[in-house]
Picture 1: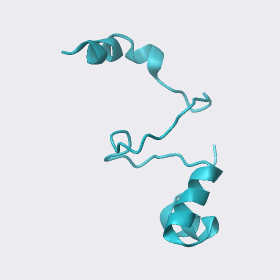
Picture 2: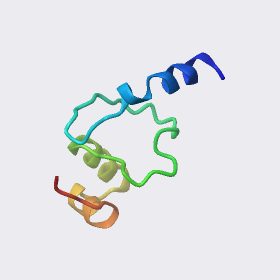
Picture 3: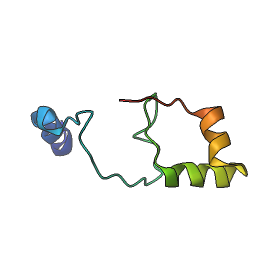
Picture 4: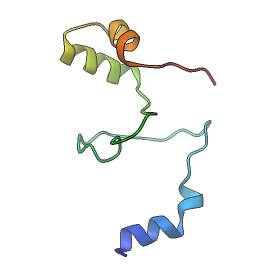
Length: 71
């Protein structure tokens, strides 16, 4: 096992994010973190960028491609 995977395995409990925790995230567009996921969280800037790329509005993106939930 490489060192990074060992570090993750050894510290998994400490690394878990709880529903009320905040965290920083910057997309590098590698595709590795969101493959086969159903729970990608988007912020307003993400919605704007997606809408811009699709030549639509953030509201239309939310209605067509997103599920919203309240905690």
